[in-house]
Image (tube, rainbow, N blue to C red; front, top):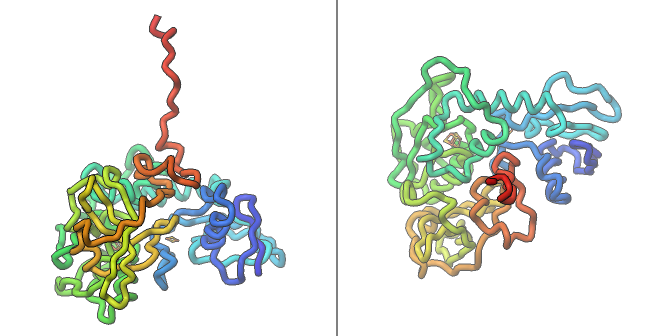
Length: 337
Ligand code: SF4
Ligand code: FES
């Protein structure tokens, strides 16, 4: 076991744990420290090999270990750096980290369009959340942005490459759920893009899961596109007796009144899919009679989406970036006079 201190909180974790996972364990044990967990745009605990691409999870190691207390010379990616006994790490407390994260967000937004008002991912987009916390008000970028034509990946998934941040999560998902992956990152540098080789559709029963792992709105569900803003729908846990041997049939249905507008997998508090679901559950079962509704889902992500959801029913405190709240002062009549 190794003892590590993150933003002044001590936790003991198994050897070989990454700093990011140590911070998440700390957040699990002490919910008040969840705000100290570094954001992750490419790491995904359920996907082998993920991480190390986006640099949003950078932290400062101020003490390497008890044996070698020298600080690490540069900021490190917490999803790829394992803890050492006695290590001391700063995330929220480090001005250097906050400055670097601001730079990373600025870089991710160089090509990512600010089309949140028309993007289906708005309200549950990790880049939108990061933009609230670290985004600059203006861009310094003066060159042409890269643009791509929208592409259909099969008949149910739309790829909007302009929004892609090349996190590779969808590629690793396809690696994990299929024997023969047909999409990936082609070309390099500014020309790098997610595409299906020879523009094939992803013919796989679980291909819809790439929508859920995409941290931005690059991959969207064509059966839900433009039907509603997510914060105007209510998520419920639901299940059905799915005949697919690898699908548990345990999903979240997003409803408006009695209509099921969208079906997704259930996500945990880190915004990660709990279990992959099959395409039949996701795309073809949109009737109330298809599902046994278990009850409303709690929203405990620090997303703008949780503003209209079950805040008051939540047993946990809802944590949000302070920027998403206006401080409302009681109306002072005396000022009118
Ligand atoms: S399409 Fe989405 S999941 Fe795939 S690499 Fe781009 S941002 Fe990541
Ligand atoms: S989450 Fe660590 S580099 Fe992307």
